Image 1: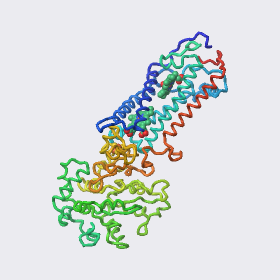
Image 2: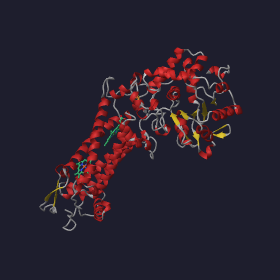
Image 3: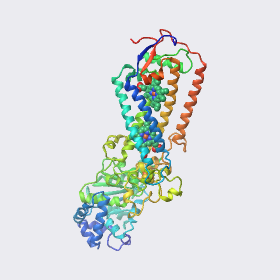
Image 4: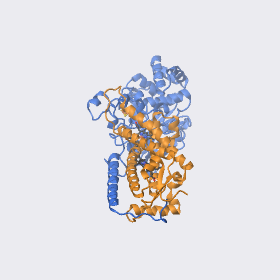
Length: 221
Length: 379
Ligand code: HEM
Ligand code: HEM
Ligand code: SF4
């Protein structure tokens, strides 16, 4: 109960938290710079200015950081604690996960009143994270494929050769552009849900992404 | 070339067939092309092949000695724009050299012979020089309903392509239609038009897309073969790297304005008059690989972006479908009505999600939750 004394539990290890906030910062930077790449404003007052040049430089620098961060999180899902494990992201694979998903869904759809308190990720959130990581892959693959075209036949261009076989250039551009909006869609849902569960669970949901700790009635086994 | 068409006896299909024994150098001398013009041509070709200038003497030497190849030129579903591009070169001496090297044994549009005589010339050329002649194809090949939508001399284009490309040393697909199907292959592609590579798989095909092909690139491809004895290195779309190895956007003369942030916002505005970047007017230069910025068209006179028009992406596979709309940077979103931009759809999504969660939040604020008990509690 909310008025019960609670135990402090270490849930999110340092790499999980770092990746989360680095990703968020990168997405903000990539979206702002990407917006100006997609809808450029004539900032330049002389041909020796370099405004678009800098905007693209920022985009590509953040892009490298973002790609490294995303990959680090994927690798961590194989070495980190059970809350960060890749298994968490496929709740429908286990019986307990399926039950929890149904409870969660009923709560979100305002059918059940009982708050399904969660120690690690909640199963609906992980489903959204899987989709999000799919969008990340689209962004990274199309982004680097478009980027590598400044040096055709270079090593990056060759490594991404399959992208040019599968997709047209303009198709990749469109996918890269519209997937930014899909990320925005996720973020709205995500921040709302984090806020909602922070209020409902009384477990320190939002601060857990900073500190790593959540607060639970039961003691850690 | 105009002279040959008038039939002054200096060229002509029949005569050309007899002169395969002379080297190109000898032919040019016979034609009265000056050594100076010839060397100038060799430097131009060296540059077109993206080789250092020091290669020019080697090119000249090789061309002096090498025999002129047999070449047949087939018209498929096309507008003949590539032939036009070849014939309309402004500079007569260079054009003459080009045509001399490319001197064709069979070319439906420009040959003097007609009817059975013409078909006979083709049959003779491909039989006599089996495995050694170069085939140039202009136009796309219809494949639907057995290919009946395009026929010449009573044979479908598909049949002709199989017959002629099959025995060729190499086939050069000139223009976007021959390379990838081009405009005829644009959705819904009523004739099932495809490029040569797709129509005749398994043969050696060099794609020289462009609408039209840049005649210099065609000549350079053949000169490359004559000088090095092999076809040039190709990219994954079958295009020679010397001509299609760099992106237009990276060699564009307006690129400083792109990096600076100076864009044409409207046709004829101040920026347009000053030569600013055409990115916002739908330029496909960032997605297009071709040497237009350096090689230009019509004896290096100009090219679309120099003339103030955004690149249409004409030398990319399926450009008519993938590069449209011509004056917008991004394609329309498939499945939505035209004129629905990605941003409009995205904004709708975001507003919709925001509204849905606002309602959810309000309903949540109103309801009374139940605490989980010892059994249902996870932690
Ligand atoms: C969350 C991640 C990202 C977001 C939100 C994002 C957003 C955008 C947007 C909106 C554009 C403009 C697209 C257009 O209208 O043409 C763009 C362009 C681009 N982005 Fe990203 N991007 C992201 C990640 C990446 C990554 C990882 C790379 C990899 C290098 C990358 C490389 C590029 C490139 C090369 C362009 C085209 C630039 C140009 O043509 O000058 N992006 N990005
Ligand atoms: C661009 C914005 C954001 C993205 C893409 C994003 C993405 C993610 C992802 C992928 C996770 C799973 C963490 C993991 O296992 O590695 C996560 C968890 C979390 N995020 Fe974010 N996040 C964003 C912004 C925020 C913000 C602004 C907040 C704070 C209000 C926040 C709070 C949290 C919390 C509390 C969790 C743990 C929730 C759980 O799964 O139980 N996030 N986020
Ligand atoms: S005009 Fe086109 S190709 Fe040239 S810099 Fe601008 S966008 Fe690139």
